[in-house]
Length: 367
Image (cartoon, rainbow, N blue to C red):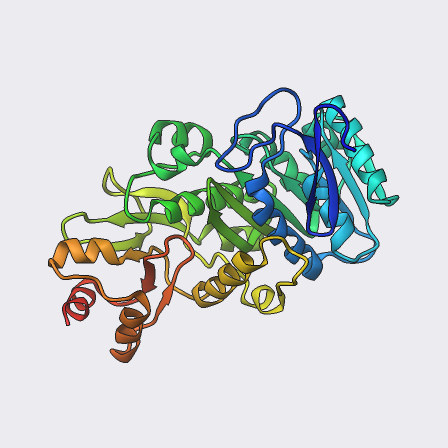
């Protein structure tokens, strides 16, 4: 029987007590002191897949804003490593519920704290730090970068997507020090702005940020990045920052070194968003509740891992050419037959990436 005001749910192989009025879809609305969003199960499944490949024995693994403990407890329960898992939430009610959930799953290797996250990060060093706030993560990133051990990983979630998409560019400039801009590929520039911000924050401390798995899903962005010591490495990462330029008339888009027009977005990360080696190792198991979606996403990520930045949509080419769009897989085959690199993208089901110049792209689309 569930306690009054709580519901019992199962994610993966982990049983959880959560608020009985929990959010079942969408970005979610925070009610009361505790928050749980069922739609984020996919993201937590990805975290488990990531942890199964990246976590090692004896590491210190922190879920810094744990809420009901769903993500941190699943990592502790389902990744199969003997490590020190620390779940923290400043809200004492949340900490009490986390302890109850940990006990219910017999997770004796989980420690629960109730501290201000920045204070905790200032006092201790961790091999893995997950920061999943309700809104922007900017208030925690600097402390997380400093607290992360060299070659450790920070995992950052951002749900303030509207500023990063270009809907509120002034807010984006204040928070992330970057210009955002509306465009058909704004989901990608938003993610790259977030990665670029992390790169710049790490570089302040002579540390490099190496993206391992960065994606957009539903209402949020998620970054997993390795933090490595070294001013030279930090300089090399900074050199991968640039701007995205978009010409609405021609549909052309490109990465540039400097901002010239008001529509340019950046500075943002221009390098790869994925580690091919990590994606090759990651696998989907049947115990994951969103295993079908995870499998589809992992397949697309592997295709996209070495593609060029800034995706196109079939619909925008159809409007420009007045031609009906072909099936995506057919058009990608046409591009490859013409000698260009092309792949699907996880940013949009009708999106694709290619190194084909815009004139060639339109000509091939008309065939």
